[in-house]
Image (cartoon, rainbow, N blue to C red; front, side, top):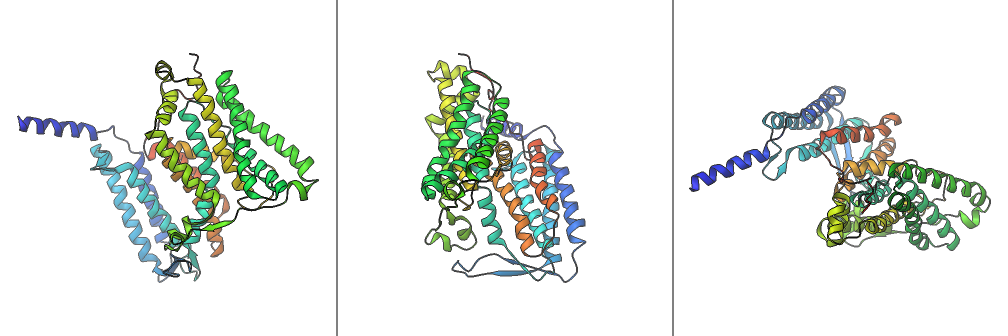
Length: 435
C-alpha cells in the first residue's frame, strides 16, 4: 500500500511540473549571451580595468572601490549567462517549470538580467579610469521609479476590481499640478502633498462615473480623461501660472530625511533610507496593497468584483459601489505619485511634464502580473534604465540616448510576450456589471 501511494505521489508531482514546450526563454537568453560574448568580451581591450564604487562615505564601511580586470569579469559573467541559457534549454526540453521551490523561468530570467546588466556596466567603464558610483546609480533609479510605482499601484487596484485605468497619465498630471499650485500658494510642500491625491481622486471619480455608471468603454474614457487633463492644465499654465509665477508657480520642495542607523548600512542604506517622505510613503503603499489585496476581506471582495462579480453579488457584495470606491482610491494613489514631478524635485509645474509616465506605469503593472510586488520590480526596471544614461554620462560613456530610452520598452515587450511567464488579467476587467 505504501509503495502504491509513493508511486501515485511521484506521478502527481511529475504531472505538476510538466508543461507545454516553449522555446522563447532559452532563445532569448542565448541571443543575449552571444551579445555579451561578441559585443562586450571581444571589444574590451586586454589589460583594461573597470572601477566601481560599491559604497559611499555615508556608510560605516566608507567608500569601497573595486578595480576589476574587465575581460576576466566579462568572461565570468558570460559563462554564468551561458549556463543559465543552458538551464533554460534543459527546462524546455524536459518541460520542467521548477526545481524544488525555485521557479526556473522566473529566477533564471532575474539572475540572467542581473548578470547582463553587470556585464554592460563593466564593459562601459572598462579602461576609462573613472569610477562608476553604483550606489548613486541605484539611489537615482529608485527615485525615478516613484511615479511609476504609484501609477502601477493605482492600475493594480482598479483592474483587480474590474475597471481598466488608462487614465493614470491624467491622474499623475493632475496630482503634479495640484501639488505645485497649492504648495506654491501656501508656501508649504506638505499641504501640496496632501492635496495631490485629491486631484487624482477627482479623475478617478470621473472614470468610475462613465465606466461603471454609464457603461462607456473603459479605454476610451481613460484616453479622453488624459486629453482633458492635459488640455486643462496646459491652459491654466499658459493663462494663470505663467502670468502669476510668484504666486502660483514658485518652487517648494519636500525635505530629504535620513533614517538613523538604517542609512548607515553599506550600499542599501543610502539607497533606501536617504530619501524624501514620498519615497517612504511608497514603501508603505506597496506593502499594504500586497498584504491587503491577497490577505484581507477587503482584498477578497475587491478581487471578486473583477473575477466573478455575479458570485460576489450573490454573497452580498455591492459590486458597482465597490468598483466606484476603489477606482477613486486608485486615482488618489496615482495623484499622490504626481507630486513627484513638482514638490519632490522642487520644480514648478510645466506643461505635459509627466511625459507619458502613466502609460509606462500601466506597462509595469502588466509586466508585474497585476501584483503590487511584481509591478514594483517592473517599475524599478524602468527607473534603472532612466538613470543609467545619467550615470554613464558622468563617467564619460557616450551611449546613444535613443538606445537607452528604448531599452526598457524592448524588455517589456519581450517579457509581456511570454519570456518570463504567462500573466493573466482579471477575468471581468473592462466589462460592466448589470446586476
